[in-house]
Image 1 (cartoon, rainbow, N blue to C red):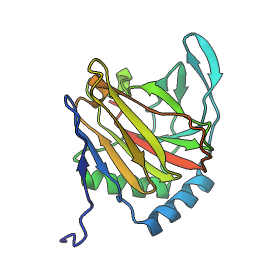
Image 2 (image 1 turned 45 degrees about the horizontal axis):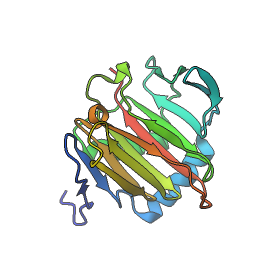
Image 3 (image 1 turned 90 degrees about the vertical axis):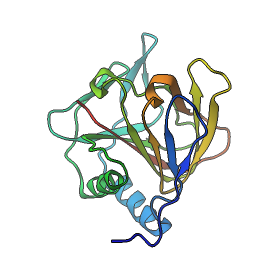
Image 4 (image 1 turned 60 degrees about the horizontal axis):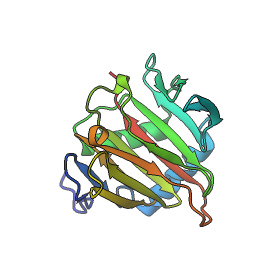
Amino acid sequence: MLDLFPKEKITLPLSDAIFEFYPNFFSKEEADLLFEKIVNETPWQHDEITIFGKKILQPRLTCLFGNEGKPYSYSGLTMHPNSWSETILHIKTEVEKTIDQNFTTVLANLYRNEKDSNGWHADNEKELGENPIIASVSFGEERKFQIRHNSDKNQKITVNLNHGSLLLMKEGSQIHYKHQIPKTSQPKKTRINLTFRTIL
């Protein structure tokens, strides 16, 4: 069927990698509905991670969904997947229609307020392979997403991840760049982020 209202795609001006941003991937009405369902249906966890040898509580809540038998590990934490919910599976299907990629897993993140964050990192865990593709869907409060090149200080950008948006981090993105959701002094309401990935 011809899409009479194609989703706008913005290619970010960064070298050595492909980043594509769809600011209106879901309409406001659908994003509102999906946000409420995910908040209420998800068995959120508040886990400890290990940073520089020290155990701390993650500054956000998380939950892993995915195919049976495919755990995911990062920062000294191993998560085992919950079965796909209808809501998460619907979002996964919509994302897979846009990108030629089948995802096995999604890490759901709940940022409760402005103090919740995610420090500089790359999604480069060994189970994701050498050059993974990550699809990041955002619902709720808009937050700043910062990207910086590992060696070229001029290659950096901030993207406002708004309600219903999709950011695709494609070839080279986890090899040459790191990204973060910083804390902020401005009051922020709840934000949900779904990062779809493929565990080999």
